[in-house]
Image 1 (cartoon, rainbow, N blue to C red):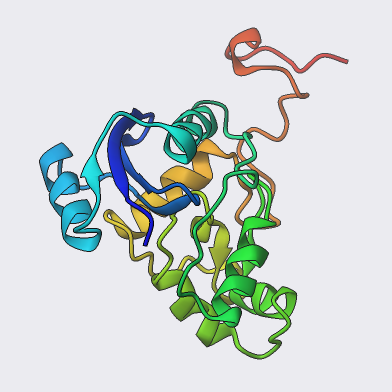
Image 2: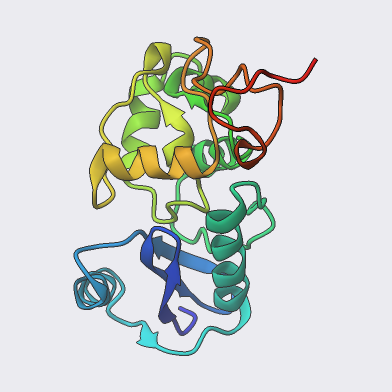
Length: 198
């Protein structure tokens, strides 16, 4: 087993964590009740990991995740994962979830179909609940049938899921958005009560 390291780092949603080895990422973690709680959670889940300054896959992940949290569009699919011990089904499900771009969502059923397991939406939901790489394997982009926001196992639950989707400016339904009539201009350009440009 390759030596593991972990690091905590600041993002727009709070302190996150990353765990890695020479192969790639072994895990990521969303904010907890504070840095110490997150450090304890990482140490319990990956007891062999030693806290370190980010290097290798860890450094790449920190940079990419911070960028995604800042711009809502950074692609994380190039980050290497250490998938040692995963079943073929889990590998396919996580690959299908990683293929969903920032700002878009899919249902559990759509991920199941993309993973070559149509009809296995429930099994996909269980896989998302075990996801060791939240954000990198974007389980927050996977919804229940008809776009329903279902349980999210990360700290903060559905509220965290909504924050991530908001950063990515994901549309959660086909209904018009609150700002769809602004003519594509940045909000700072429009004055209250002004008419959209013609």
